[in-house]
Length: 153
Picture (cartoon, rainbow, N blue to C red):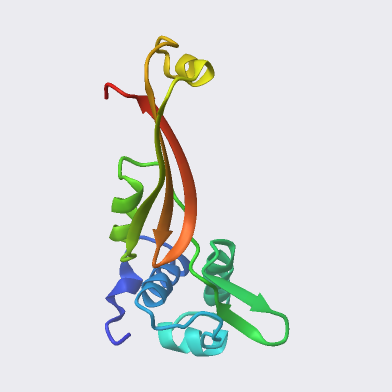
């Protein structure tokens, strides 16, 4: 980091270091299960104290970006997907993170079900569509979803 202007923003240094490390992680600079630079090397890179680096790394470990092995070092963790409730669809949110998303319809049925109709607040005689989908992110199964909705929608 030749341009150290990032150090002068109104945010604690450890949070700015954390943000930059996340950017490096997301860009693929560090590989899964490979050791990241030592705290000493990171302190030199960012021109901050060891304590600042330790705090940033602790947050990254808590967030699931990194993990530590006692006596060995700190390593890049497998990418974990944490969703925060927002107004983006699952696919939009994953694509915004640079991930490839796919949905596979497993089952598509039209049925009548009193319990589901009650939950949907419709008459029990109305048709209900049931869709079961497998959600994949970067070709890995992430979720199996079952959705019900009134057939007239």
